[in-house]
Amino acid sequence: MEIIEKEEGKLEVILKAAQKKFAEFGLAKTTMNDIAAELGMGKASLYYYFTCKENLYEAVIRKEQDHFLQEIQKIIKPKANAVSILRVYSKKRLTLFEYCLNLAKLNGDGMATCMPFVKKLYTEFNKKEVQLVESILRLGIQNGEFEISNTNEQAEFICTMMMGLRMVAKNRMTESQMSKEDYKTLNNNMDKAIQMFICSILV
Amino acid sequence: MEIIEKEEGKLEVILKAAQKKFAEFGLAKTTMNDIAAELGMGKASLYYYFTCKENLYEAVIRKEQDHFLQEIQKIIKPKANAVSILRVYSKKRLTLFEYCLNLAKLNGDGMATCMPFVKKLYTEFNKKEVQLVESILRLGIQNGEFEISNTNEQAEFICTMMMGLRMVAKNRMTESQMSKEDYKTLNNNMDKAIQMFICSILV
DNA sequence: TTTTCGACTAATTTTATATATCGGTCGATT
DNA sequence: AATCGACCGATATATAAAATTAGTCGAAAA
Image (cartoon, rainbow over all chains, first blue to last red; front, side, top):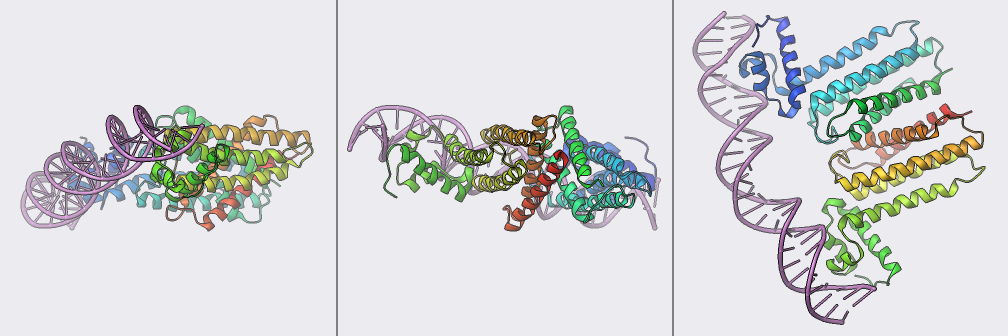
């Protein structure tokens, strides 16, 4: 129900409205009508911009994922301290997790029951994340901070470990939603894991 | 359909039959009749030994859990090498996981959708497991192997991390059942986690 | 040409209902 | 002490009807 800018800005406005509605009802229970209504436009018009609901949802998630990747990428530069970058990575990764969890509102414990395209979405992101972490590790090696033989293996491992911690947190959550306390505990565990990992690769 | 020994041995026989059926159909789809038939007895007779299905299932799981705990407990003795005990713990823990997964045949990703009593069962076991790990850590301190300030915190953390790795493995499994390859990968990750953990607490 | 939308369809989800199965009990029997 | 047939109520399953919703299309507005 607001005046809409044209072309470039329009996609942004739609994504924002979609994001708002997904956060409100979750992926499954948000209808294309809900989103269109939020924009004050007809449902058919939405399909002019996005080929399907999955496409729209993917764009919303991807936007945040890319933002995360770029933010970390931004601070990976020669002579930057790899250890502190890893800590920033851990912190920002938690924020991304919170965001995605909020937009999905997956019932039960996760991805097994969710749609295949969501699984694919996260699998693809995982690959990028591993590459990102690997580049941090390589930076650390260049700086003489770390001593690692197989950077890819180590990057995959730490990503897997972090994912595991997120899963445990999600599983232990009270009342089908993670509380502030739950996030705090998860944050602690992620910090410990990163610390332990750093300790094991430090020169 | 076999001759049954009396009293003490009877419980064992029932547990074995129940275990066989649970492994075949999983918790939800195994009926009390299935188990009774396996024993060549009437369903009502089963209720003479176990008050309810949950009770029976719990007994089956508990038996294996206790066996695991005792096996590790057995090798925790003064002057025993704590590092190698941690490695044994990791290995046997995987075996227990495989066993429990097999008996549950939980659909989807896990405990969130399963019955509350199962959740409780695993929560209670988790406490015992943390205590077990903590006693290994204390042994390591006594031996002068480890240097840790808060043993309970560290024990909880490593247990959480290992649980996370199991969850990831379960989530990534192909075809609603973990393959030999999946277990191998999980085993590798658990070893790495333990190795990293040890590295971080080593004197 | 670009963008919007009402009207429509096919597919999915929800609802309602009937049926079957299963957990658990009880009284009788061995 | 141990077993079991017969039974009950609750839960799960199967089926069909009704309601939503994803996605399409052709026309109209900009």
